[in-house]
Image 1: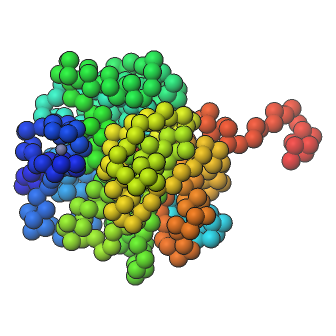
Image 2: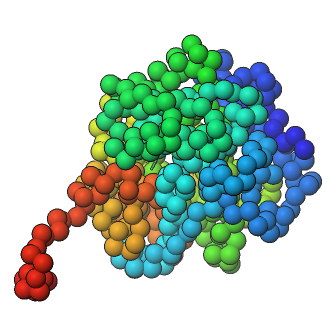
Image 3: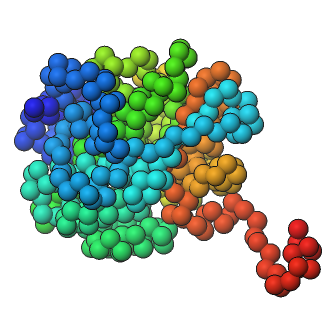
Length: 413
Ligand SMILES: *Cc1c(COP(=O)(O)O)cnc(C)c1O
Ligand SMILES: [Zn+2]
């Protein structure tokens, strides 16, 4: 069954056939939404046909994806997605919530949410016969692309700012990608990747530029939907989902996933989506607060490197993820982000700064009255704390160094 019908521009609404365009709208540069044949999918599948599948990766949603099965079922591609969701009763109590859950994306093969996008991208690259995939990255998108590419013998080239956390750079190198560290910002790397793709005929994965990244990221919404069928039961309040936002592609992907399910008639109720940005990287939240879809570039300064973006590549759709779901944008400062790493650590969750940002946003949203006690809340942790141990060490006090004696232990207890 050919489910992939083409694209629709998120700005002007113009439609394109699959072979007509590759990245953004030629007319206005708008992000392209992938169009699926919802009627054909509906005719062939019921929700049960999906939820009864035994595949424990994002490939269980293959009937709702615009790519075919990439083959090689024993590769890390088949470990992307299907991440765990935990209840956090202690933190719920502390925040005054009845129900709080965390979906932990750090369990993806390269330890961040980005594996979802890269798994689909690598499958797409195979379909169109791309020899080399290139991406700009603050680190995680590159690590995900490098890892997924290595798994299937695909060549990849990564441009990351030279300031990226060392663990992320180590991942890129270990996966054997062609890595170039850019003496500039993430936004400089983005521009460079587009230029290099044009010059050398490479396939560009850049977040929010390549329409297939959202198609991978939407699988998190499918998982939340499947989980909620059981976890929320008869609760008729909409689920409130907290997502950290840089380029705005994760939040757009989650919105797209829920919209796909809505079009299929499978979604009981659209969740509210809350975007959380760092005060030092707030281009999308600024537009939200100004009530406009005109996103103005800023000069990003946050230490949460994965969400440090001057000009978001998926800003308009990211805004709509909040405005069209009765959601919001909230801002948190870097101190609150670092403190959230420690708070999540206290309940056994290890998050990198951008991963802890969504949780920091929850506390902020509660203080603003955006979330009430009886709202069911789900927070995403988008990346592992092992990605940036220097940030993690800022969240805690130092361990004492002691003599190997019981006296020393007693003195320090
Ligand atoms: C990329 C990333 C984000 C933000 O995603 P955007 O699509 O840029 O908004 C958040 N957290 C982590 C860990 C990431 O790697
Ligand atoms: Zn357009």
